[in-house]
Length: 445
Ligand code: NDP
Image (tube, rainbow, N blue to C red; front, side, top):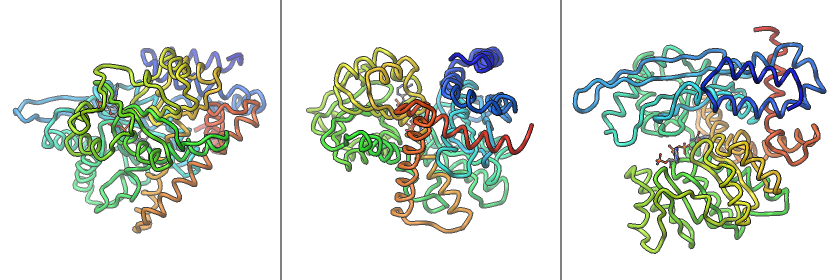
């Protein structure tokens, strides 16, 4: 980065948000991409828009007390970062994972601003969560935690204010408990959460949306570069919501998904992963990926290994942030991988992205590639407002259109600012312009 204003701003962000490296990383990547934009349009500097953009509108941090099955009081921390509402109500998931702290939620909320803008839908950026770990907890414990969490969160959200959804550790079960508690506290039935069950206002295709959307985006990126999923070997990290539906769609598009992982290790099944088995292990039993061997003893399980050492043509990281470092990126390149698209948020470190770009690997950044989840959440909001439901095919067709448009808008923005083929820059620029121009219209506020 050479622009002195952006360099100084980044230093201020780092000093003001000390001890939050993930947030610094997310801001740095966006500011780097904006360099050609501010050089051409000094108004974004003069108006203070970028300075306002890197500061959340509101950070809410609260105590979440609950009682475990042994009658013991447990206390967790809850967060909601309402980052930017320039183009619509705050929108973004809730993450329940022991690694959650303010810096993680800020990085995710910041990314969400640009991602939501890219969808073309009227949604601002936010994110929330807790350091609560649902793993190993009984349903009753998860319910008591979710009710306590929502008792405080309900004071800050609303169908036209802030509409949370799921993320790591928050699926249909957790959304159900939280929606039930909101309804009870407020005595109103409104679309205040997305990812709801189909019997109480959920949208068809929301469960599949992030994974499917990732593959629609990747398919378009491949097509635009004379390549395809057909016949390709794909490695996917994680085995949660995003990974499962990415596996399903990639397989439908003609690829063979040969590996999946969880935080304990990874499995390899060269004839193609049996998704029914994975769904039973993960969605029904809430078990570990190594249990795949109970269904397919001929498959391989590597305990504690790094899934990126498996040879593949296409890699879809769908687990967590910074899961592909420089070394893993080099390994992927050496093994002939020609495309990487991010289902998880910020799964590649800046050094890894550099390796991909230097070696001509097609690279779809998270903001663009995984926007299908939030886009479909916004479609759930539309259906809730209309008190009407669309069919699976209708939602899926809209999702596909949105993902194809995101690819082309990102590619076009990159080209316009002299960075043809750089979708990281293109997604950041295209996402920024809509938000920044709205903020310009509002003046200083
Ligand atoms: P899930 O909780 O359903 O699944 C997460 C998966 O990733 C699990 O297999 C989990 O393994 C693995 N994982 C999580 N943390 C780690 C870690 N530190 N190291 C290794 N593996 C890990 O979450 P989702 O599938 O919903 O989310 C996955 C990613 O996609 C996240 O980055 C999320 O922000 C992003 N995303 C999700 C969207 C959605 O609609 N759900 C939308 C857009 C982005 P284990 O069970 O062992 O922890």
